[in-house]
Length: 171
Image (tube, rainbow, N blue to C red; front, side):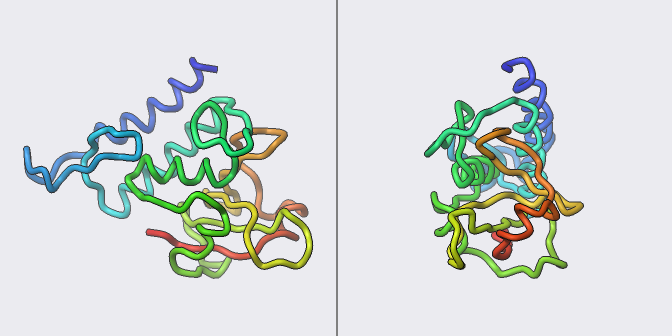
């Protein structure tokens, strides 16, 4: 597991290392990520690249689902999204329902990698999100499921298609 995690995270680390500072030594060009590490400030495109690369790396790390989990020891859906976005310096609320209240509403046909996709997995007709994932492109999204842990799922799978509530762009 650790070997796969290191391989996957290497891609995200290389991406982060390859980003240049706009002016050497200027404190305005760095930020402290949610893990307490100093990182270069990124533009939106760079942040989205970090989100997608890091989420993809975590799919290869065999990380399991953990109720309430917010770390690489185990994630729940919103903990995963919050963690991945935190790596790019973007702070999101902790729950799927709270994340659903942030950002700009996006139509399904306009989804772009990095958009948040919301679902009602709790049952009933509620429009309140109980599950969130990160759109990966090509009708797929990064998610954490009880059975597979961190994985890539198709939006067109009948289970997810029936439970889809909408999407938000947070960057």
